[in-house]
Length: 105
Image (cartoon, rainbow, N blue to C red):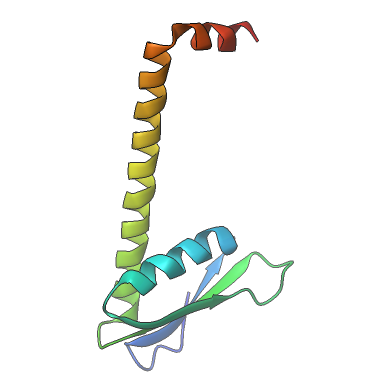
């Protein structure tokens, strides 16, 4: 949900069922974008799973910039996952005794 859409370059987005885990990573990703002037987030109440993310841009549509940041964050996570999976697979091939120990437990 988007709040304060009178100005396309400045918006607050409300993400439900989320917490610091996504919000901090998204804030970091947004702040790496040269189109972003300011990005911050707040959690209105600790017992609510809701995050408000404020995005101000140099002129680009804040919603588009947020979407781009989410896509970039997803790509980063997919890269980390595939790299980790590859390293684990390689390690297990080089160390078959470790895999045998895991199946015995």
